[in-house]
Amino acid sequence: MDTLLRHSAVRWISRLVLGVIFVVASIEKISAPDIFAANIQAYHILPLPCINIVALIVPWIELICGIALLMGVRVTAAAGLVSSMLVVFIAAILMAMAKNLNIDCGCFGSTNATPVGWPKVMEDVGMLLLGLHLYFYSEPKNIAAPGEVNPKI
Image 1 (cartoon, rainbow, N blue to C red):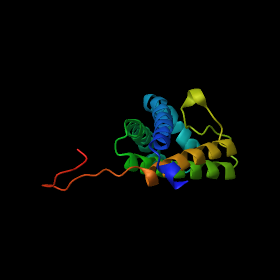
Image 2 (image 1 turned 135 degrees about the vertical axis):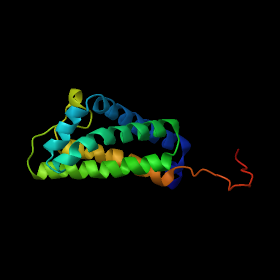
Image 3 (image 1 turned 30 degrees about the vertical axis):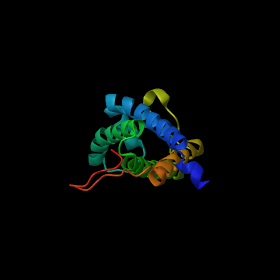
Image 4 (image 1 turned 90 degrees about the vertical axis):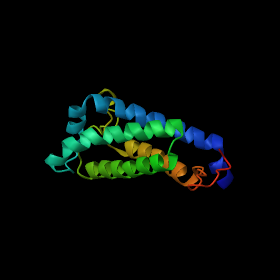
């Protein structure tokens, strides 16, 4: 199983799937931060002064991480950030479910409204597994120290 998880084609598929999802998820949120801010506010988790800054920053982090995954650049860092965000998203959805909130998750903007619930939790857990796969099984870059020759270049 370990060999399969380290296989370059399996890592490539994980990067492609997760990268596309995060790029697509970021686009409408970047173009309509007011709607995303309203989605965040509906969770009743963050204090009001924090909502706008989160609505402005999170989609850009999603976009940058998605592009990094698609390009294969800083995969471990991007996968770590994506996985961390997914843990927060899962926790937020679970808290909304515990409060019996009937709200849109806000994951893909208003055009793809999806209510919070177990299907959304399972979807995010699946993405979290892809992120963790990339975090733990990314191929380390062999970077030479200053003055050394890097044999892989």
